[in-house]
Length: 175
Image (cartoon, rainbow, N blue to C red; front, side):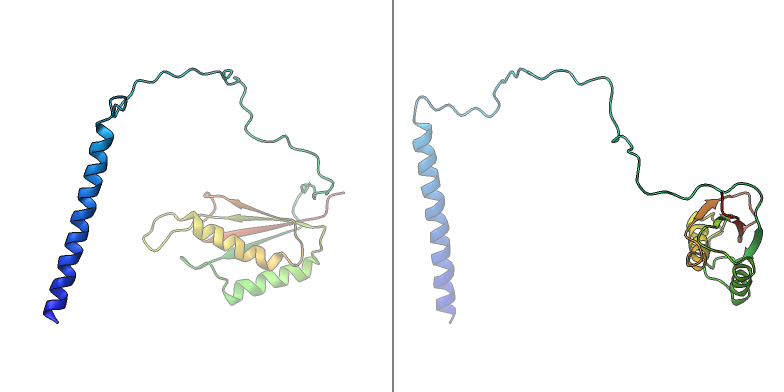
């Protein structure tokens, strides 16, 4: 078994040696030609036939009017306002806060024409670092509850609001 292994290694070494020898011979034949100069870096001059770029840069497509009607902004005072309080790091409702929101939605009889604004206050992460992502998740949790009633929901981040507080304002349909 040792003898077959040794023969295999020897044949492989001979194959590599023959391949290297063949490559060297071909390269020598190529170098012997007088018109074939091998230059690694050549000097090149290029000409440009393009017009210069315009000074006015277009950054986006023009906005075309849509055939779909978007709901207009609210006007006037809110018909209802609700303050929800979240735990320090939590993005989920407490059962008490969830029932407050459900009761408000039922009392005001919110429909598809009503509009809702949600304001979120600052939130701190576990390391006591301001984390707007937690505020965003809180607002999205509230919006998921409101969305079946009305799809006109706007969300805002206001760091001036007390930490952990989410304010919801309900508005009458605009006419």
